[in-house]
Length: 115
Image 1 (cartoon, rainbow, N blue to C red):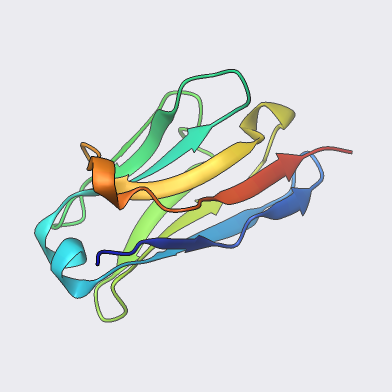
Image 2: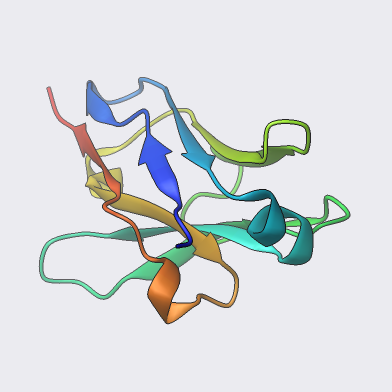
């Protein structure tokens, strides 16, 4: 069974930083572009960052310049470094392939930005 396990969320003050991690199976990691998604209460899930197998990255305009996606090929892990966090970044964050694969959604990790 395929698993993607997100971790690293928490409560942080505005302007703070967090680093999210997503551990995947080698088969997924080596075969697909990987993405970080988020879903805030009452809103649709959105893709915030993606990284291709070769390392090319893309970001949503709302996080560009503040978030950095990276991947560690040896650990089959995708990271999301989030700096200058804002209350609007509060959401559950998920990793998945990009475009997403329905059966790969995990539990996500909650990020709350509040003073």
